[in-house]
Amino acid sequence: MGLGLDPVTTIAVICAIGVALTFGLMAAALSDSATSRRFDRRVNAMRDRAQGVVPAEEAAARSLSRQRKATAIDRWARTWLPRRDLLAARLERTGRAITIGHYAMAVAVLTLLSAIGFVVATRIGIVPSLLLGLLIGTALPHLVIGRMGKRRLNAFVALFPDAIDLVVRALRSGLPVSEAIVGAGHEIADPVGAELRLVENGMRMGRDLESLLWDTAKRIDAPEFRFFVIALSVQRETGGNLGETLANLSDVLRRRRQMQAKAHAMASETRATTMILGGLPIVVVGVLSLTSPAYLLPLINDVRGLVLDAIALSMLTTGVVIMNKMAKFEI
Image 1: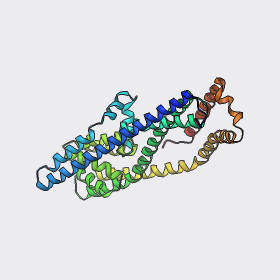
Image 2: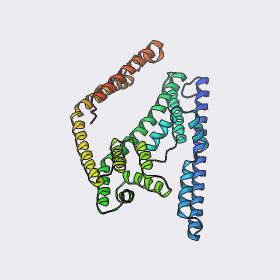
Image 3: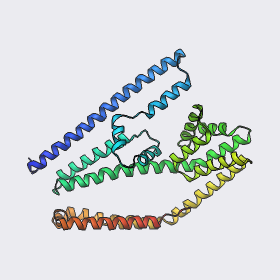
Image 4: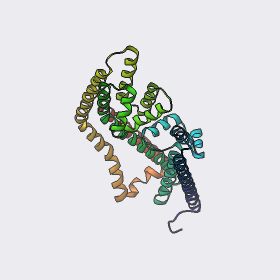
């Protein structure tokens, strides 16, 4: 009892550590078993390919079916987590092999570790520590996944006009649309190349090009790619010079990108003001907690102080959100 904790708090901390270790052991076991199974499948696939037993189409079908299988944690997460479809779309938008089970495990581990940290480092009690741990455990993975998806989307939008130019050149040389898209997928860098190669894999499985492009548009959620799919759909129904249409689309997308960059530069002052005003209360609380910790105790130990904390946090969040909305321009 060197930390000065009461028996109830000590038991709660020990239970939380045990649950965290259990989650860690489960994750290690699942990752090890998945790695060993993946290694065995690769060895068997290489042996069968060398003997000419399994054709390439069947191997691709097996690979897609393995990717769609879910572990027990994934099935549990899909059953109990709210808004599972939206969460799955956000995870898929990152371009990483992150499943719903991995996300749920990360939330649980971060919640437990944060709660343990608050219980050990502060004296606010078990219930406030659990609430703060739950807040951090749910908010931090959400922000990280959103940041990863946004970064990949920006990289996609930056490279997509170049991919359209490659498609236009292939069309003008006499290739069909499907072959032009396949060639662009092998020439352009990721993430555009990775998405177009997924379209190529789907066409090899016998799916229609337009449906594959619409699936990609839903996964990417970029207006630029939807413009591209709509242009292909309209050209297929009405006819016309597709190369010229896509060349005009590439020029429009580049100009739109330039306008967005100009608007972003003009709103830089507003974003800086938002960061200063939003971070100033946090800095003040941090300085007071170091210099005069007793001054902040009524805001933590008293129910009225907790109510005032919630009101202040909600007002600060509302102000930051409104200023961020004001600094964004839809082009």
